[in-house]
Picture 1 (cartoon, rainbow, N blue to C red):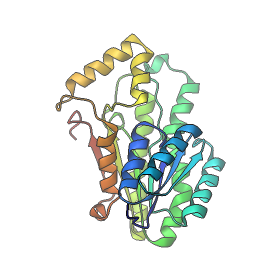
Picture 2: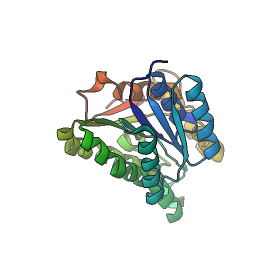
Picture 3: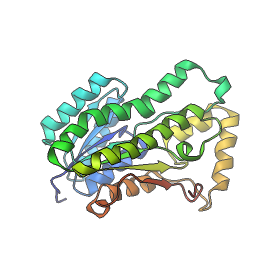
Picture 4: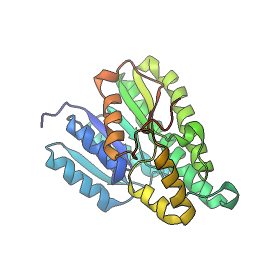
Amino acid sequence: MEQNGKSAIVTGAGRGIGRAIALALAGQGHRVAVLDLLAENAKSVQKEIEALGSEALALRVDLTNCQEVQQAVGEVLAKFGHVDVLVNNAGWDKMEAFLDSEPATWEKVIAINYKAVLYTCKFVLPHMVARGSGKVINIASDAGRVGSSGESVYAGAKGAVIAFSKTLAREMARNHVNVNVVCPGLTDTPLLKEIRDSSEKAGKVVDAVTRAIPLGRVGTPDDIANAVAFLASHGADFITGQTLSVSGGLTMC
């Protein structure tokens, strides 16, 4: 595979959508830093990327820990020299009604889905600004655009990611750094399986939403990865501050 000289960071890249994004970017010739809380998963994806002929770096990182994120970004820069693409993919959710939820769950949801995005942007963007180029793609959710029963805090955190990204796009435009958001709908991932299996009610909600998707199926990780790969490419150089739903038509707004 011919390398394109660019480097990318993908968070939560050890499985599911993050893995697919990491492989898609590697397929475009990017060197990819695979950041994940589970070291073995990150190492496995690193090997897959290397098998494609691209360079990779696997790092075990708790993305809710500001110091660990700063250290990880430093390691990526030391290894690759620069970061051209940042994909904030890591996420977590627990499906339950708000009145049944507890503050400890709120804190975890907000930390993984929103604060982690703040941390990576805080430490990667100064480098992109100094170079005068870069692409940031944040993975939110259609829950953050239209709400979703049983996902109140998650929807709030993802809505925050969308609003933050739009503001960041305005602030970064003068430095030629593009910031966009991809909002997956239901996607066939290990997290979706965990949610479906968490309770009978959750399983019924997932099934009902699946039946409502106009294209007749849940998404695949590759569906999301293809959208991210486009936004990371030169073809999207004049696109910033946008939110793209990849949901089979479930959300049209």
